[in-house]
Length: 187
Image (tube, rainbow, N blue to C red):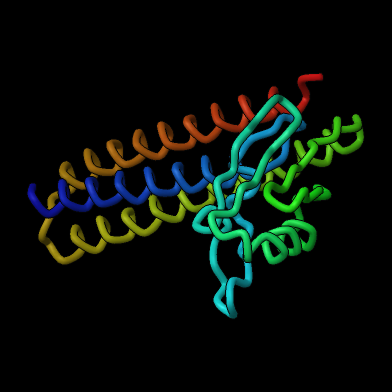
């Protein structure tokens, strides 16, 4: 049935977006290794406009423990440095007048455990978003059956298909979580 197929396709798209969003959130969690994604959430006050850091500067990884931030406009150097200092990434910028260097300190065992809890929370948010998509579509399917627009067999088949999509999306989030957890706990 075309309407049911459309609903399942929409659900799949929304679940994929939830997985991608979770992947992005996990990338911004600090692991003790330098990654330009650590600074993705930083917003700089650029001449009175809140502007994402990646639009104002080139962020590069020069080695495993060092990030360099090179602003395109040297006048924004102070604002970029201030935004990094005030952010929740917990890094102290050092500025030589052209480039801001961010040394990534070694994570302590206690900090690693805290980070694991943070990534578990991010993954759970992703799982909840996926389950919400499933719940919404299940409700729509039942509504179709109640209105007589779909038969019981069509509804059952669609629900089974939807459950498989849900299981696949949650498995993908679990895989992302496992990888991030290993990355954090790696000494």
